[in-house]
Image 1 (cartoon, rainbow, N blue to C red):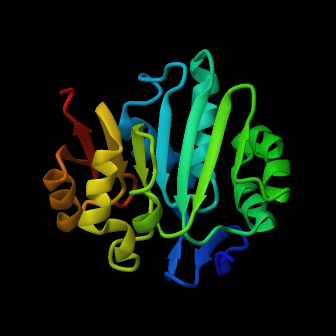
Image 2: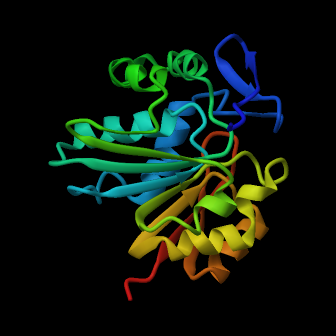
Length: 224
């Protein structure tokens, strides 16, 4: 039996993990931060094509999935977006739905996907999305994964509070499961994170962060 996320709510709408003492998304504007860090940080939507595969460490409230699918649809991309997420402590369905309600711009997509969360689905396909959630400790589940992603959203809680998701061995697995020319992005600019990504084989860039965060990290894997 997998453990579920333990939450408090800030201002009634921002979920905060009591296990990691960290909010699931930016108090200021979680959607804008997701678009800046994870979409723009991975060169999206410009790289979208049929079957483009996003993988993520830390599913949380599902905000990044909703934002990615909204960008996919707005871009007019043909075919289906693939999205695989690794999550050790899944949020209860009703908590996810409550958290997503903080973003009215994504309401139509949130409503469309809500039945899957309520049904406890961890893998499903729609007309333009193939979704898989891999539940468990990513340090165990990612090495066993038999696929590679075109772009990674590295969205664990902060390295100081959730060091497991920033372990150099795990980031080496991220690199091993990235397509040539693929990318990764994270809100973290911690030196240890940047060094681990570089040692794993990424070309790492410290980029302007969102809001009050001065810097973030983007990474690219060589085409070879």
